[in-house]
Amino acid sequence: RLVEEGKLRAVGLSEVSAETLRRAHAEYPVAAVQSEYSLWTRNPEIALLAACRELGTTLVAFSPLGRGFLADAVPDPARLEESDMRRGMPRFSDEHYPHNRRLLTDFTTLAEALEMTPGQLALAWVKAQGADIVPIPGTRDIAHMRENLAAETLRLDAASLEKLNAMMTPDQVRGGRYSEAQQADIDTEEFA
Image (cartoon, rainbow, N blue to C red; front, side, top):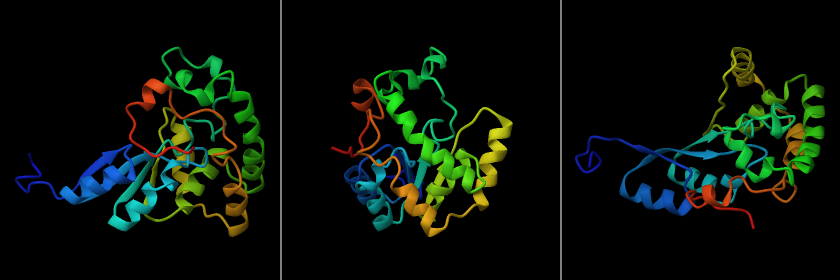
C-alpha cells in the first residue's frame, strides 16, 4: 500500500530467488536483499548475486560466519542449547557434522597463517566478493563483536582468495542449510 502511494523509495527482501527479486524490482526498486552467504553457504552465487548486480541491489549477507561454524564456535553441536535452531539443520547433524568439521582444518590453518581469527577470515572472504555485499555477523559477545569490527580493514591477497574459493565448495559441504520443513518456506536457488 505504501508503495502505491509513492511513500517508499525502496524496499528490502529476505531469502529470495533471483526470479523473485526481479519480479519485486519490476514493481518497485529493491534497495537490498538479505540472503545467507558465506564461504560455507554460497547459494547466492547460483543466480541471486548476478541479479543483484544487474538491478543495483545490495546483497546483505546474513550468517557470514556460517552460523558460527567458520568462527570455529561449534566444536560439538550436541552441546548447543535445546532451542538453538542449528540442532535441526542437517549440516550440524550427527550424520554430516564430523565430515564438515574436517573441512574447517585447512580454513583455521590459513587464518592462523594470515594472523587472523577464523571469524575475521570468514568476514574478509565475504567482503572480498564485492563492495556491493554487506556482511551482518551476529554475536552475543562483546569480544566477538570487536573481533568482527576489526575484520572491516582486513584484505585478502589473490593467492589466499584462490585457496579459500577451493575450500568448502558446495560439493564438499555435506547436509542442507535447512531442514525440509524450514526449506519449504525459503525461496532461494539450491545447488543440485
